[in-house]
Image 1 (cartoon, rainbow, N blue to C red):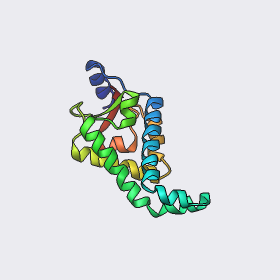
Image 2 (tube, one colour):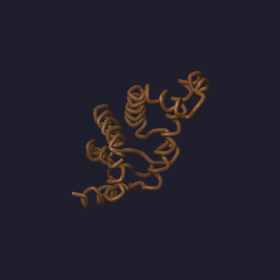
Image 3 (cartoon, rainbow, N blue to C red):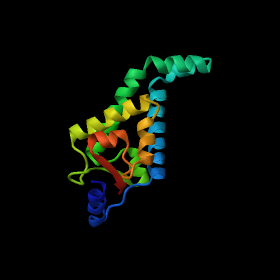
Image 4 (cartoon, rainbow, N blue to C red):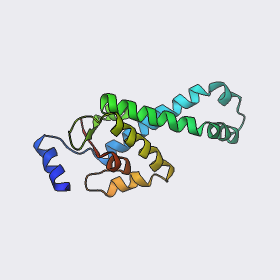
Length: 149
């Protein structure tokens, strides 16, 4: 199975993205979304006097933040085949069957499982570092790969 996918990628001139590029894209996306959260809660953050107050404030909006992450990931992957971080790092998400950007359902599946993986101590991301195709849990669930753009 893995060999078939690898030979198909090779035949199409595609290369799996490195863990380093994926990590940098992840970092960029997380910083962007964190900045969005801070800006949306701006006045409340400015009124916070301690780090503990900031933590309590962000914990009050954890469900909304997770929903934003799901929508952000799903929209950008469906629309562009990549999030802002992936675009900057010149990598993209493809469907393993079509080798094209994922459709709506695949993108939603991928983004939902991604958030679940984050809640489980990022174990799904760690899995991707040991997988031959570098597929994280959300990639396996959605049947996607991340390749160089």
